[in-house]
Image (cartoon, rainbow, N blue to C red):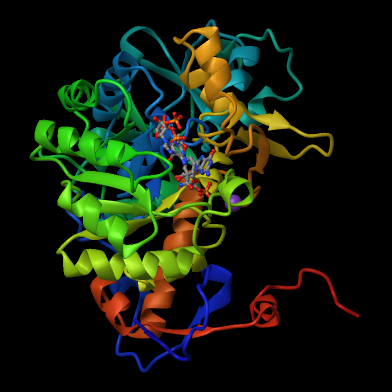
Length: 485
Ligand SMILES: NC(=O)C1=CN([C@@H]2O[C@H](COP(=O)(O)OP(=O)(O)OC[C@H]3O[C@@H](n4cnc5c(N)ncnc54)[C@H](OP(=O)(O)O)[C@@H]3O)[C@@H](O)[C@H]2O)C=CC1
Ligand SMILES: Nc1nc2c(ncn2[C@@H]2O[C@H](COP(=O)(O)O)[C@@H](O)[C@H]2O)c(=O)[nH]1
Ligand SMILES: [K+]
């Protein structure tokens, strides 16, 4: 990457723009988004290890489209083991159905339908034997105690595994899309015999022609998990590996500290064969020390997060674009990589982090506001759906993390609050699922890369020309949904 004009101060995403360059890339589909950092991801997007962001559905859904989800360090190890096994038993190809029985009620259906964006419940008998489908539209104007067996659609389209299991032939998926369109269905169960093995959606058929799942050596979806720097770090790392976790993230607010170096050494020793990510830092010195201690990937970002009050509390941090740029250059010099963590609000921010040399970009709160986010779906006074997000250094998270400790110790730890305990992340009505956001982000990044004449992330970071802009330059780039005069 090179600057168009020389910066005189540190910069964040809003301060910069990408300059178009002569390009030989004729299609945005010719762009390869695979990060080459050893993590097995095929798109450069990671869901943050935050309680409000990443749970089983986030990990599963992202991995199916090639991204990684990192389970937070506050989740008990037995739960991580259960979630990892659950994810690894999901289909890498078909979406997971929401399943209920014929005796379950409309009330039950409405309570869980929103867990998935496809808005359908598949009604099954014993052993997942297919009975019918209930859509959200079928649940209006009926009593909430109506049993699903009485309203389910039994004539909805279904696909047999034999029809759609052939490895990602675009023609097969296009035909499935056409059939769904002709039958005016958005979603259809996939059956092995009469057993439901997944659902296929119109959008899903298109996505399966664009994305490649992030799979482990046995062809199962990949799972990441974080470990903190306190307690029996080596034991926790071993337990995560035994649970089948594929990527370990050693994570603390101030990653450039002795305790982190020691913890990282222990994780490295316990996990010689899996990618180890460590952070957070914002300087080349920080990168050097974490790489020396065994990190394959260094996580960059202090203070840019949407839930984060660190900069207001401490004045510590660094504008994120400059932090990523300096750290990525340092990591490249050591044959390692960085993940840009925090502050992503638009697809352009991801493109800029990649142009600055990050191998992947971690997204937190933006992903919290999706069907796959672990939070409860709430509706505000204006009828807008949202989920809550909160920081991992907030009072709420610290209280949860220190639950097993004495009241006095908890009171002492509660003093150091560097995150907000509640915020509303609205679901975008046009993009309520995390895959919708992934579509939007990767479309933006693919386009950025063709503007720069790059077909790989390495080429993009090498060719990108970045200019510095004023606040009005940034503002000019925004759309005007209402007239201005
Ligand atoms: N990227 C960012 O900007 C930030 C991210 N976070 C996130 O919050 C979560 C919790 O992290 P964290 O608060 O580090 O908690 P951890 O549970 O990881 O503990 C941090 C350890 O480091 C010690 N420590 C020393 N200096 C600091 C410091 N300035 N800030 C925090 N701890 C320090 C603490 O000791 P003692 O308590 O005795 O001081 C404690 O032992 C993580 O997921 C982290 O990523 C939190 C803040 C900033
Ligand atoms: N200073 C704090 N940083 C936090 C806290 N919780 C999470 N984080 C960091 O934010 C990113 C995600 O950023 P986002 O803008 O995408 O939401 C996450 O990965 C952490 O590094 C916190 O309480 N305080
Ligand atoms: K912030």
